[in-house]
Image (tube, rainbow, N blue to C red; front, side, top):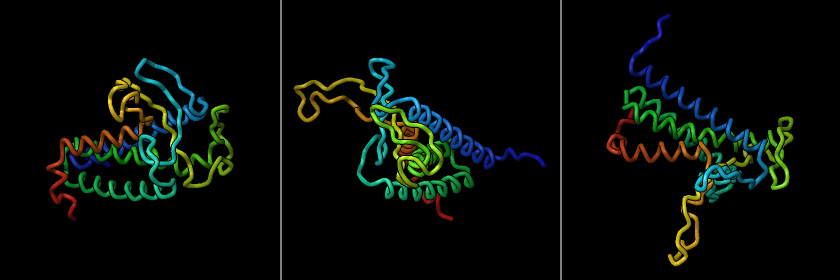
Length: 206
C-alpha cells in the first residue's frame, strides 16, 4: 500500500502531527508543574519571566467569567466546530499557514479541556503548603468536568508608572497562562491577521 503525498494528505498529516505534539507537550508541562510546585509557588527565570503555578476554572489567561462545567461544554463545542473547519480547509487545500492556525486553536482547546475533564479525578488538591500527588482514578479533588486548568507562565515585563491613571502601579500583562492558552491566542490572532480574506469567503460551504 503506497503512502500518498498529495497536498491534501500532507495537510492532514501536518495538522494531526501538530495537534498531537502540542497536546502532549502541554500536558507534560502541566503534569510537571502540578506534581512539583505548591500552589502559588514562583521560580524566577529572568527579571521578566517567572514560572508561577496557579489554577483557574475559567477562560484563558486566568479569566473567570463562567463556571467550569459551562466552560467545558463550550470548549467541547468549539473543538467540534474547529475540527469541521480544519477538515474542510484540508479538503479544499487551504494554505498551510491557515491549517497551522486552526490546528493551534484545536490543540489549545483540547489541552485545557483535558484539565477540565480529568484533573479533578487524577490529582489531589494543590495548596500553598502541599504539592499535589497522582491518586487512584476517581479519588482526586473533584469530579468529571470540575478539574482546574493549570497555568504557569508569567511575564511581568514592567510596572506602569504610578502617575498613570487606572493602570498606575500595575504589572504590564499580569496574566498567568499555559502553553494551550498561547497556542489558542497565536492561532486565532495569526488567522485574523494573515487569512482574514480567506476566512471571509464561503470556503466552509459543503
